[in-house]
Image 1: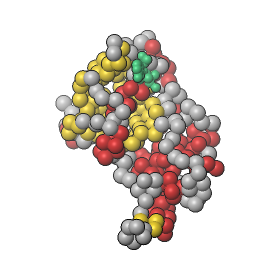
Image 2 (image 1 turned 90 degrees about the vertical axis):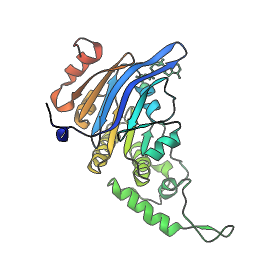
Image 3 (image 1 turned 180 degrees about the horizontal axis):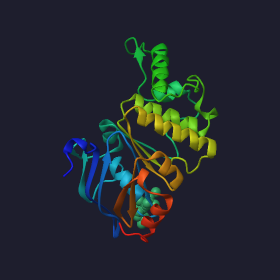
Image 4 (image 1 turned 120 degrees about the vertical axis):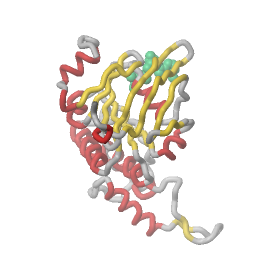
Length: 254
Ligand SMILES: Nc1ncnc2c1ncn2[C@@H]1O[C@H](COP(=O)(O)OP(=O)(O)O)[C@@H](O)[C@H]1O
Ligand SMILES: [Mg+2]
């Protein structure tokens, strides 16, 4: 028997998760463990239930059955805000950054630092600029100018800002649903670098991707979903793209 001290610590544990939409059973009892501080990929055909699972973890959907443990404790993630309070951030393709604001303004969106006493308050711009520089530094992207408007930036840079914001405000788990699906080669490489830097900061990353090359390059662990269930997990270092295809299609049994 393996000693407990050698077991990876699971930051998220999903037990018997079911999600029904009327008569549609999108998730039919998912059991999944997400190790702390690693990059976990979730793969599966269209309709396998990947996005539904992510939406349950990020507080968008209520569970029909089952439970989610976060850092070993059962949690009810009733809203995206509740997920954020736990330290779970989700990055979607259409990012929540605002084009007409600067990087600093985006980083402090709805969390502006003010000085003085209401109604004579002013934004504390100096403090926000310092904080913004620190947030951008944490994920190691020093090429982005914090005074620049987001609208002028590439997709990869926009993602870096959204993620710096999440990390800067204490995210422990960052979930990417198809992060590079809409990006070109260069920008996909930027996102890959970003994911590696997040891992370097001890942050747990979950990534949904159709790109097996990307999955095998970035992930430590791969979960395979089929028809509303997590049917297998593999260490990325121990499988090939062909193995993953076989698992996905059911050619190889789990
Ligand atoms: N809001 C919804 N209402 C009804 N059915 C849904 C809804 N969201 C997803 N589904 C269904 O649940 C299944 C899983 O979908 P989804 O989680 O989007 O899969 P994936 O992300 O793996 O492609 C599909 O059959 C889909 O049609
Ligand atoms: Mg999806």
